[in-house]
Length: 164
Ligand SMILES: Cc1cc2nc3c(=O)[nH]c(=O)nc-3n(C[C@H](O)[C@H](O)[C@H](O)COP(=O)(O)O)c2cc1C
Image 1 (cartoon, rainbow, N blue to C red):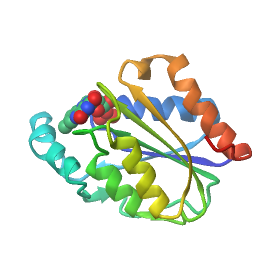
Image 2: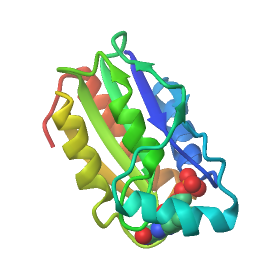
Image 3: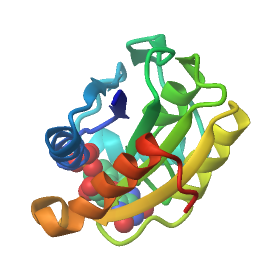
Image 4: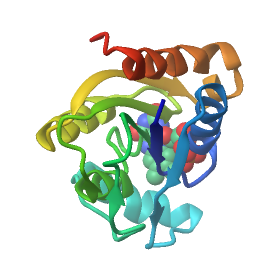
């Protein structure tokens, strides 16, 4: 089984989900950093409008080679109803994503709004075979029973590819 989980997390919630899934199924973790280095206020004043406009951040790592993996998981915080600029850039930075199984998740305070659909669209545009998407709240991130269905979806995708 070879899964990588690519995620962005400014305040730790998306990271907590990614780490739980990795612990459950044995995946590699790739954290994407937004080089803008937002302050708490800056995230709202600058980051949220950029997310709403679908902008791409300058990120580290600048290139993400997934050619060695069977399934690619992408996790994003929801900012202004959208994926973060770091995740927009991360999808653009993928190498070897064509034809790969992909699973998406987001974490938010209220709900995914457009975030999951946008990430699914961007991955499909890059040629990925998107198997499913799971919305989680910050509260879910602390509950193993809320994270488990995401891990199960990734496991199924990696095993045989049940389309959700
Ligand atoms: C700039 C900004 C914008 C946000 N916009 C939304 C939103 O539109 N809808 C929502 O439900 N939560 C929103 N949130 C809450 C985050 O999605 C939520 O706290 C998320 O779990 C943070 O992930 P992280 O801790 O991995 O950075 C926003 C948070 C920030 C910082």
